[in-house]
Image 1 (tube, rainbow, N blue to C red):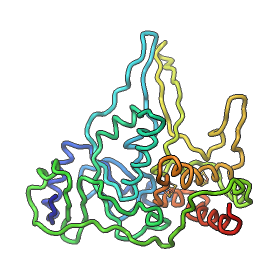
Image 2 (cartoon, helix red, strand yellow; image 1 turned 60 degrees about the vertical axis):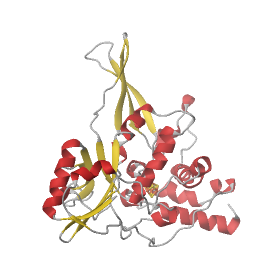
Image 3 (cartoon, rainbow, N blue to C red; image 1 turned 90 degrees about the vertical axis):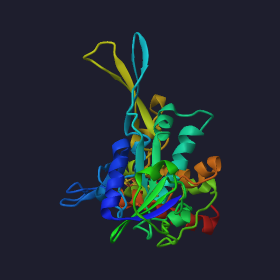
Amino acid sequence: MEELKLSWYEAESAFSKIAEEYKVVAPKRKAGKGRFSDTDVVSYDRVELLSDIVFSARTCFSAKSVFFPIRETMFHYDKEGIKEAPIERQSTIVFLRACDINSLDILDAMFLENGGYQDFYYKRRRENVKLFLLECPRSFEHCFCVSMGTNKTDNYSVFIRREENGYAVNIKDEAFTKYFPNGTKAKVEPHFVEEDSSSLNIVNSVDCSLFENKMWKEYSQRCTACGRCNVSCPTCSCFTVQDIIDKDNAGKSERRRIWSSCQIKNFALLAGEHNFRIPKGDRMRYKVLHKIIDFKKRFGFSMCVGCGRCEEVCPEYISMAGCIEKINEVVSTNGG
Ligand code: SF4
Ligand code: SF4
């Protein structure tokens, strides 16, 4: 392990060498692209300069698409057979906060440890990615990572902090020491948030009577079924599969998978037009209980890392933490 303080120039020069070999994906400010007029957004994108990285803001959307693209061609096919779809092979570095690094354990469980099969498409991207840590000395609005136990991590190759006179780096992965020939030795430890703005208790099980509780009616009235909560979430991993027929090249087709959302109307649609989660409150109940209880029963840890993004992006300000608190209230009053 190497811990260094670097001047602006030393750090930028080290980073430029890294960016020549790796595709670097990090939070970047997009002027005028925010949700409301004349506002900016901070979102994940490729960066060429260390100074382009936004260290101090949470992104509205996670970096999940680096590992699991929004839309991915799985293979091409025609009457001759099936051909694997090529992907970009350049190794990637992604800058993540502790909760987002911990969210990869959840994606790994879903794609690599689920039902005895490993997802080929996820695996080939996941193996090609190195993690750089962004620290969180303070909680962002709506975060509850401490309650979810995802506020800390030591699973990173390099930690970088922007300081008043340059950068501080902590290099854990020896493969990266060669990029940092300069700098002054110093103690550099990441800061991790230690307290949520309001701490949450997470129940381990609920009685089936919770399914019929009136609390879900509020979500039927408020939720617009837009699916933004799923899209922004670092751990939602549902997708749908489509066959695309190329009309200009007769006989040539491709199969794609595309992100889906358990909050949209037809997610639970079955053959014969049966849809077993029509009220939006039922979909909210499914999402929240899957995140905090069902997934944990199967894999041993919760499927929510408390990043707060779903509340941040929801047009109706529906809060995951608020819903967990309501479940706690019901459980403590009537046991389920
Ligand atoms: S459910 Fe919400 S708070 Fe939990 S990980 Fe997903 S986006 Fe973050
Ligand atoms: S973002 Fe909000 S309104 Fe949209 S589906 Fe999710 S909970 Fe419903």
